[in-house]
Image (cartoon, rainbow, N blue to C red; front, top):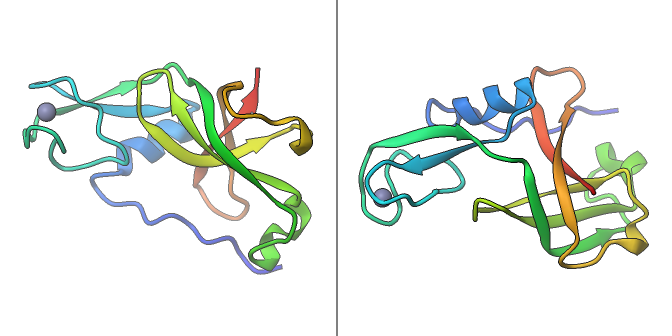
Length: 134
Ligand SMILES: [Zn+2]
């Protein structure tokens, strides 16, 4: 089995990945205007400030939209199908693309409450934020 693609980790995104490894979903918040840029930025996307502070998010959100993949887009995902690929809207506002795990895909619906879970990628130190139904 070939290896999963590992997300590139830069100085800008490093606190996000370090948080995931600890089991925390980390978000930036602009100290000047309160905006929560996502994915991580070097500057606020709203006001341009470089004063972005990292905070642990609640890990709670709702399914904004989703699709079910019955065919693996790559052989490494073969044993994960059918898999739910979703956009989750966090209670703090940002939306992120993720997977909904440990569920019957046919019972997933827009608006369902979810909470963060963390899934280590085999043969790497990378932990991916994923979500499960609550
Ligand atoms: Zn700002």
